[in-house]
Image 1 (cartoon, rainbow, N blue to C red):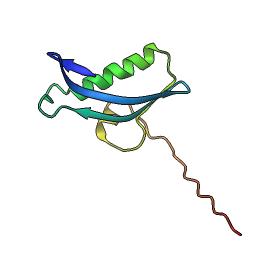
Image 2 (cartoon, helix red, strand yellow; image 1 turned 180 degrees about the horizontal axis):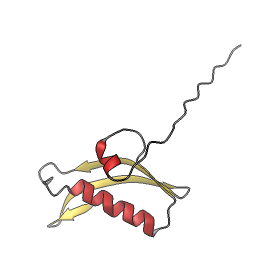
Image 3 (tube, rainbow, N blue to C red; image 1 turned 180 degrees about the vertical axis):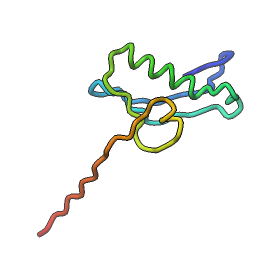
Image 4 (cartoon, one colour; image 1 turned 30 degrees about the horizontal axis):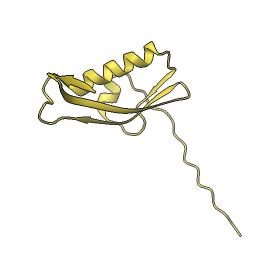
Length: 87
């Protein structure tokens, strides 16, 4: 959580698995979201923490939102596999 004056203004839910940080979801308090971009600030702190913890990968997961690219995100190839059972 990122708090201002003891009130939460932004939050991230991440998975930490196999030396990867995977951003699952995030949220903002709409009454407190200002031009100061608390979500981006918290994301920067989260990336910094991942680096300090020695994580190899910081993965934004699905989606092509612009903030991901502004924060250094790169597209990663994802494969879909469909298995069909034939009797």
